Image (cartoon, rainbow, N blue to C red; front, top):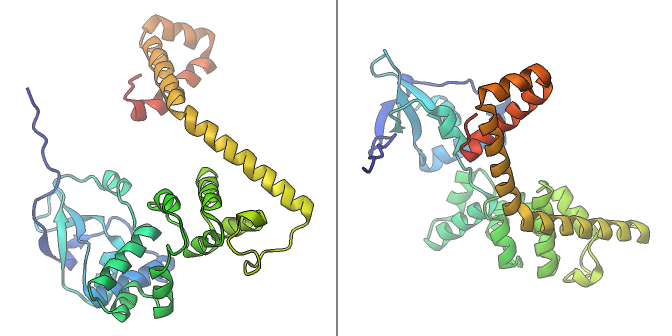
Length: 297
């Protein structure tokens, strides 16, 4: 029998009173002074509320709503004196789950949004005002992917990467761009500083224009060592990529077997009596793997 899946949100948004929406956390002074807050404020002034607030009914208080997502937007609405806001109504209070699934606009996605808006005739000044940037910065973001190979765009399409990173990548040949992008992802470091360091360690043969590329002076020994370490890291990345599926399968089988053992009362008692530290360690392994692999201790 097929189980019907129920929606956790109402199908249509509602226009609610801003004063009736209760936040679940406070916006600090530091956040209010941040570029992100100013950008949201500029966007609301220029084009209004694009992404609705997500709220759920407050149990026991009719016409009161608990805010699940959109705390900065709500703070800006209060600051601007707005009385109403378009809201998406959640039928369950799942703020933690919802916030965990929120994906903020990545750098490449922002570039594509700007390009599409310009193609559709939106004035550059209006886009710049909505993003709280000047026209020079807007032009840089519009040309973000010029000289970047498609493989790198695919690798970084959902990553939060600074625009300066693409400036460094643009000075390299396509194969080196791919290598550097993979190294940055493997190392979990997508900063412009790391990109410039990798650019400095790039061989002249992997640069598009050696003369026009400003490189930090490195000694031959430093350059050799950096190239060697980069190649070693790239090899490690390839090995991990190839063995990841097999490693996950091994982990699934091993944790499943351990969970089955721990469900045996006699085994659990024996371990707790003879090897309490081992029993605790095995329980922690199963608990850590259970949410991801569907295991139950």
